[in-house]
Image (tube, rainbow, N blue to C red; front, side, top):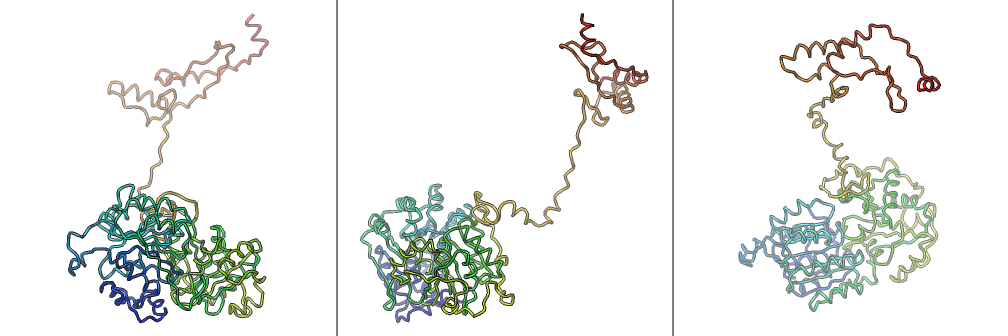
Length: 573
């Protein structure tokens, strides 16, 4: 079965150069050819000769042009594995169980993407690659590190945690890669990245890759790289900041009409998988729910979802069980899914870099795509800054509604399309068809589908246990309350065990007490702390008192005289 990326490489620019001609190991070339990847893209062709020599590299290329293999193949060449010893390229003394290469990425989704690509390229040599990121349990990651790992791909937070606990040994790292370095700086990871770099050996190869290269990234490169080679790769026929084969449309839309517009855009002719980007987590969750009610198979990926739910949505999207993925900018990088034909910016992005990464989810590796941006009236100034920075030519978007004829014409929407998907076209299995994996997540965040940074909450997991397991538990006997008075038991069953000499009196007392009705206690009235002469003695549990109780009740009860304040004063005088 071919990899989803294989078709992308076959559709790419026709190059006469092959990966074998660039000097990579035969086993690596064999693993790539097994999934249909034969010819490199420009960034890969330009980077490999320099990076294979051990030189530090700064790689810059547009998103979706193959940067992962650009740094991934040289990184795999730097790792020594048993297959190299068998081939005579290395000695047994060079083998180690500690990681020999490290890739630092900003997001969990990108971490998974890079890990999968490296596993594919290193399959023939059996290179061990481990993804380390938050939202998952520590124990499986620690166990994998104990068994031995060759390449670690991780996010800064979890890498620092494991390194601080001395579970992750970074003393044998020969190659460091900072992928999407500009995003790590934007997310505030710069201090963590610097701490990680300071844990590494001074003598190493460092590669830095990103689609954009702001000044802060250049400063980082100057501090931690040694005479790097800056490689910027573009196709000869691809000018400007965006990929040429991505058609872009920008409309001025009203916020209350956007759900209806999106529902009709999703029914355009030739529409495959679609991604919808929102600025806020709440908006993403709301739009995903609205589209589901309208009949679309949709999923959501945003920060309020736990890691289990996020991975569930991404798996369902990759497997085709859902064809609409609503997400925040957390998914603007690292999602490389075959067949994404439409990207819709439901809300205007914050800046031009975010716009580039959003629309870069389509039109990848030579494929064509459509990018649609819906700009609110309030977002016009922000959009005009983005338009000016990228020179897009959409300074004043045309006012558009869900019923506008030009919307149907430009996006190939059939005439008469409504905002609800017809039942005959609801053929996708849906998000519920993809199971949520129990990741053993730590912490607790939010409610509902959020869980603790992902997956079902503890209560939800307990509710999902098989009923047979619950039936095996023995029935709980309710506790019987013990009645006492003045410290002595009232029930015959609760009478303490006595010696044989005392058994007869105690048994007689118990029988007498059980046969006699209990006399309600009468309230004594006192004045100034002195007891009334007619007050009754305190009831005790002794046998004589219990035996005398029936005799006292046989006498006719005298009517109780009610004392008044005047009579009491007269008696005192």
